[in-house]
Amino acid sequence: MPSNASPFATPLAAPFAASGDTADKALDRDAFHEALLAKGDYYHIHHPYQVDMAEGRATPEQIRGWVANRFYYQINIPLKDAALLANCPDASARRRWIQRLLDHDGHAEDGGGIEAWLALGEAVGLSREALWSQEHVLPGVRFAVDAYVNFVRRADWREGAISSLTELFAPQAHRSRLDTWPTHYPWIDPAATPIFASAWERPGATWIMAWNWR
Image (tube, rainbow, N blue to C red; front, side, top):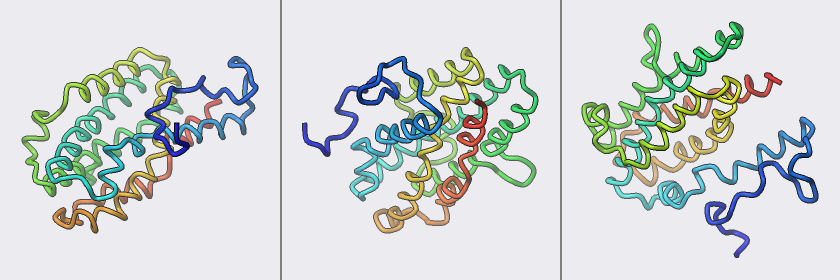
């Protein structure tokens, strides 16, 4: 297989197993950190669909499809985090994690991330009604998102927190969209893309909290 083949075309190796190590050998903190960062090779931005979108080959219909399906994921993140909070007996941890709910649902004068995604949807030609109706959500997307939420409902709260660590790789995705969308997709109002900027600039709160719960 060519060395530049997509990780999506290769089988996953044993989680965090280094060359010559046994699968049950514990890694020290630094080695675990390095192994975790290496999992970025499997992040969704390397999927062919995402690559096409980043390089300007997506059609308006495909952009709208991505936004509509991503919106379903976004509105379920607060449900996932609420489930984690319900499972968490640690008050100090709940006080830190609840900020994630506020980031998405909004508070006071801040409309939150969901409102920003609605604005992006309108900018690409989707109505708010269409987004909330979920009429464009694909069955596979619905299955995957619902499975994620249900996993966190049933798992130990610390496993739920760890499952959120994909946030570690999100800034790269948002930075790419900020850099490429204005050039590749000038028909999208740039005023509707602050959601990418705010997500890119926000520290990896999930990573920081999960890394310190050791």
